[in-house]
Image (tube, rainbow, N blue to C red; front, side):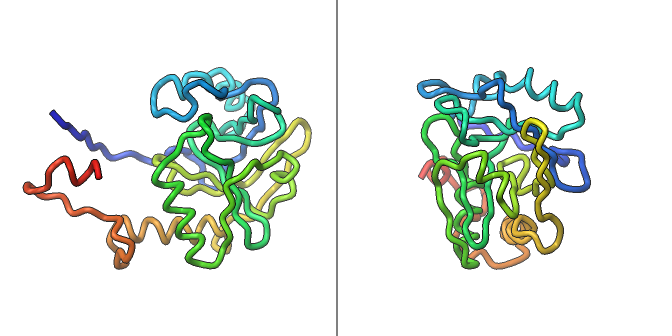
Length: 202
């Protein structure tokens, strides 16, 4: 039996402006050969301690570094991250420790449509601190601007608001999802009684 449960969800992060992230230089979210790239509770449970500590200190969420080097960014606790510098959009590669997703693919494609180069590669903390804009994306968070990142005692602020790329991409994606604009990419599937499971699996 194939069952789909649907429920309305409010804003994942209850802040009116962008997110304020803490870079965790102590704990690691995922390791090679583990379950960092799998949609399961084992993907989320390792972040609980770090996330609680960060939220108690006033941060919105935690940005984790890679376990191999401790020098490259990987993921926020429940979503992917993008870094913007000029017309280049960079995000860490899918290599077994980062959860892949349709929102990630969609945002990458939409960014290319409006002239940005999208690079999936290792992104160092230094590059993060020198970026012009940073944003998160995922199923629950959709697209959310990052207002600031704190690494040890260094706090960097980024572009947010109407002129931010994250705002443009959020509008582009949600307009397609809600049928405000024509879906020229064939991303939407109309559900009716005659659609079989093969439609969703292909």
